[in-house]
Length: 399
Image (cartoon, rainbow, N blue to C red; front, side):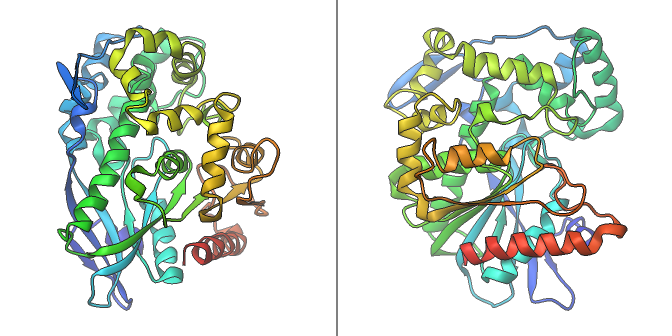
């Protein structure tokens, strides 16, 4: 039912027989200029030349469709985001921002999540897309025929590739060509969320009160992004915010994203090589990237502490300990992408002395990281029970 009404693409959708409505609002990112593609960059009084391109081998067909100048992609600059709001006639006083996983193209699986969180907490839910995900990417990147053709091209270029599919060819290729896109698109999303909150605090938002509080429900890579947001806490903006993570929370090098729905192996190798094995060398030649990992940008240091479990561990654990009473997580026991043990290792610390609430659940059906609640008739009772249990815990924490 939610999918049916969501797909109408109306600015406001009144749900029949319910006490809430779905709203779509326009957003114009003021932060696209930090992305690769500009001739020069300015930040905090410094000017930087165009970002060096460390390109891997590509073909003309792939280059034309996928290796665009990121800062020029209009869909990523101007887009809509969705709000689930109770029909109480007043502007929202409390908001939960819901962040999704890596390589997501539709909100469909998240619609029941948003509805249940809204019902349990009474809060307004904002479904906010990460840069170059959902509706922030060109439609061609989701075109089955085009992407499947490129998949065969890519598999020809890299015969030993694994986890390749039409579903992940766009993101895998783009990250393989330019791994720093992982960081820059994260920075843009980080700043877009701050922009949304600041615009709200200025009284400009039509549905949210300027004094509203903001919490987070974050899944998978959305949890990684929100951890950096909460741990860096720019201008004390999140002093009182809570974060609930689902199937997320581990540091970058303890996740295993090689899946047909997420990333292929060549992209994963490129990311590891860039951010873990040779990062210091890249910082020496990419002055702008180095600037964002200097004291000029404390959030860059927090991001770096979340890359490698063994590096900057004291900083990471100090930051997590400071917010431990306001973050919690549910991990899935059989999750092969974000292991429940690695979630505990990160959030509870190496000595298990950080008091973050981490609950491991193991629903009695065949689930996966990407599909924790399969829509299969023969297991629907167990799926509903697991869904209710998980979102009751999340809702009570965020209430």
